[in-house]
Image: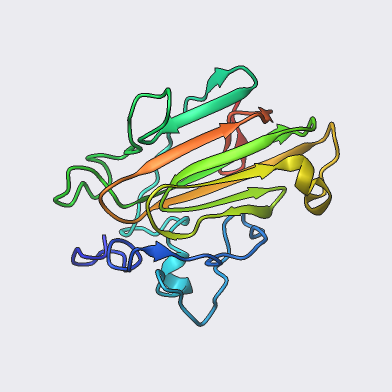
Length: 213
């Protein structure tokens, strides 16, 4: 955490506020978000060198953990819910790394981590994708950004209607397209992460480019 000696300056120290446009509208060729301000900073980030450590392995500065997210079907919608104040869902929160990595650093939970999801889906028409959570969230469909909830903030929600953006995203019914989700938990005192979608996933995700079924 940024307030810890040797901690990452983008975590805990920056002000609590929305910060849109941290990353570019197109996913990088390496499958990672691209910092949109080379040579500069944003209101909650300290430049490209520090941001590039969010989703890339840097020995001594971060650690990688492989986690499985359980999506629960509810009619045509599948949901992963680890967030508070969700109607019909018991209150919970998203703390997958408590006691892991560099530890909780004096807090009751580990509040300093990022999440990266890579999977794919078949576009059948009519799909929606909703994210609710904090802090930063970026969602890419067919390598193009469709959700930007950047910044250090309380829970925020955004929904994508794929039919409404099909032309812009280059989607054709019956074809398979990549989906990438990036989250950063950068500040106490909450961590929330919820996805509701009607997408038909074609795999359970990818690790280092290897598809998991």
